[in-house]
Length: 125
Picture 1 (tube, helix red, strand yellow):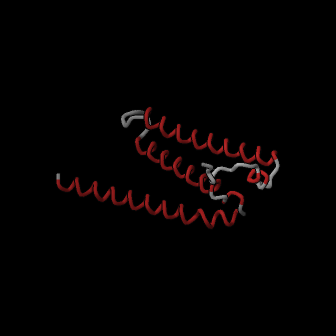
Picture 2 (tube, helix red, strand yellow; picture 1 turned 90 degrees about the horizontal axis):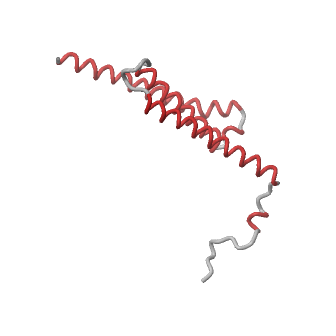
Picture 3 (cartoon, helix red, strand yellow; picture 1 turned 30 degrees about the vertical axis):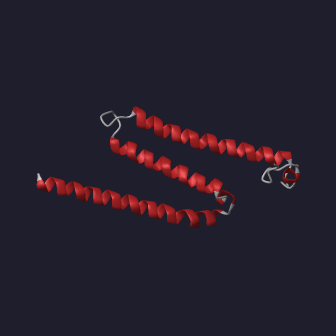
């Protein structure tokens, strides 16, 4: 029984419309993206393993570092995989700015509610 989902001939490869040099550049960019995202993730995991709450760095600084690294990864993923990096800078700002504003709002709400929750515990004890 012959499967119809397999590409038997090279018609798909012939329809790619780019040269080998362009393909090599695309593969190089993908390897760079993979390496960069892996490096940032490894930094986050390493920080989670190495730093404890009682060490020289404050726990607040470590949490903010996690937040910043995560935002950098998210912005880079949007720029590369959603092809926003190929657009003009004004369009990049228009698309990314609302996300950063929304994330900033969520962080603000989490911090203010966290302090409010902390205040409610101190009043009962």
